[in-house]
Image (cartoon, rainbow, N blue to C red; front, side, top):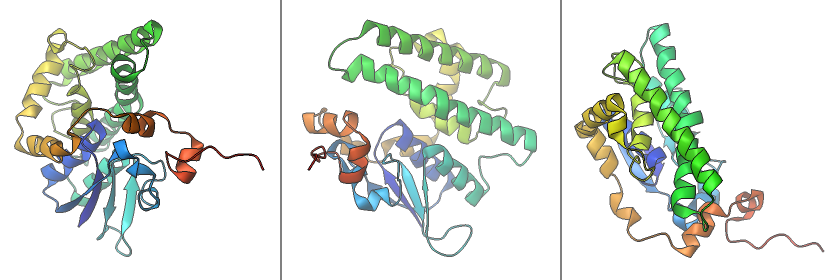
Length: 243
């Protein structure tokens, strides 16, 4: 059984989609990031970076005690290895998938996250930040569009893979990112095709009722006010005082 520590966000959707595609049994363990639950000792024991998603496999492929895995890309790699699905066996194809997974983890996800923050959540509009991250997201969509123009069906080649599952949830936020998909026809074709997959729809639906309501001040502090002290004592602790 897989325990999925999860909140319905782009990174969370990566794993919910993968688990649905694989058909693995899993148990949903909600982590309300707006209430600071990512700082609880129980969750930090699973994900020391206090970020979800993470998983715990009670029957790991190495046998023995339950295995905890954090970072969504590492979780996708683990599930692919456990099931033998959505990761090619051929060396060249496998590294094509790995490269595009790393591209999402190091590029599209962080840049889209910053773009979304300065567009939607920053307390004041900072034109330089909005332009900087907006242009970089636009560039990354151009990279993806060119790649899909070469490969056709899927990001890393002819096979649907964890690379597609990693990238798709971030493209799903294109409207919030103020990206017009019609400007990237290969991305639009790929996105619409994946959106029709039943397992993708189930993955996106997982826990969608958990996000009811807007961003409260409590949630804003938990999400955007984190420091090293937060990891040690939780997001609402007072700063350490000198004796």
